[in-house]
Image 1 (cartoon, rainbow, N blue to C red):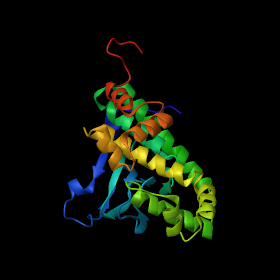
Image 2 (image 1 turned 135 degrees about the vertical axis):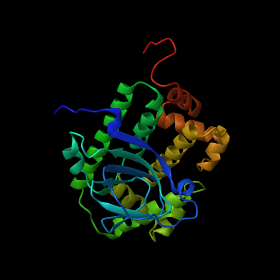
Image 3 (image 1 turned 30 degrees about the vertical axis):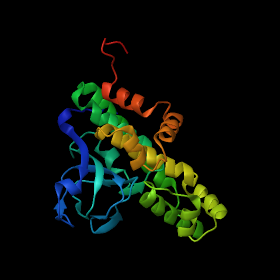
Image 4 (image 1 turned 90 degrees about the vertical axis):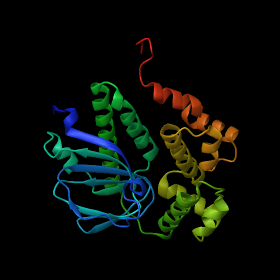
Length: 269
């Protein structure tokens, strides 16, 4: 299938309700006239799509189709895409799940931040990054559709563990504390959490900390020592070591690479 695409067909950005709607707890109900894809980067309130409530949870993705009615109980912090209803690949967007959670959200955020950084670059690169992110969303939606929802003590414990980690990742967050919140022993909790999420509690915690660190690195000018502390790392040296281990770059190398873009100053790849 050929995809015809122009820069007028879509828009994207980062939305933070605390800046756009200070002092407001609920947004007005509105009817959507385009496709909207939102990837929440911080747990918040509840969003309503055609009267169905969905939790605003870090890593969750909301796919809204034209004609839908929605509003949200704030706070809401999200990366968003808005795509015209007239695009010639609308049937792909129509096939997306309304709401699902990605098990690889840090990769999706990486692609989206590259899309944002391409805003001042050439149009072709922007289209490539837009389509790459859309393809990632489509793949994650298909994975979510294939997964069966198992209601069990183990899955409920994993949900509690995730909620605890999301609320405490900026501070000391030990396995004993997480498992106690889920009312399980550390050993058993580790087992059920890994089975339910595909990651150990430590891997999930580290991925969340690194995800937040990347956002802070690219959206502000804070010293690396401050970013390490804000993201729950015990020291800047430990932060540097973990970041290097997981990404292959130091935090400063990562910031420099993203800010410099895809081409060197001499025009050589």
